[in-house]
Length: 234
Image: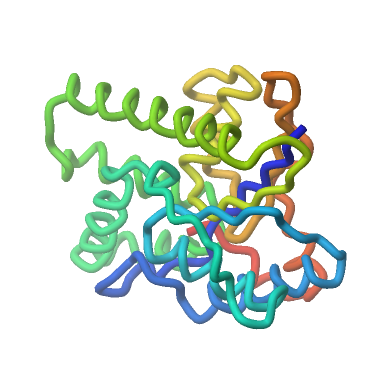
């Protein structure tokens, strides 16, 4: 049996020149997550991270709270990266916000309201601000799904039985892993992805060749602070 902790990165820097970097809030979220693990006695036999900067930053800050000296044995696996077009859309979305004052109200809620994020993405798609071949996009999404499946299979093969593993990643890979676990539809998978909060914990259990869901989208480490501003989605 293997327990896989899928941890979404801390709040990224939406609205800044470089989205793929933790904001000050994101750094605080990762710190609180590490303290939560330390207090609860949660230790990991292996620690994985996607190759994006926000993944690695979240892993380093979180694991430093547990180990005191960071996480020297961090395994960087680009297989756990977000869908590339999703990050491009985030940068495109930022440009749209700056050019269209009418969207300012939506922008106010982008960090803390997952529904606002969905509405803004819909605006980008409707405006066709990210043109491209639909068939190519479908192919890229399938390749993304296959990549996440392969990354999970490789992890299971490498770590061995009776292990607890942390994987610092994004909402997309976590949603895909849930799809493979729960056999959700495409629409359900997208909705699950929007629900994932920054530094949330989703735990899967791999046993006898099957993945099962143990915990979904837990942010107890943030809720304990009684600060709604720490509950973010981007």
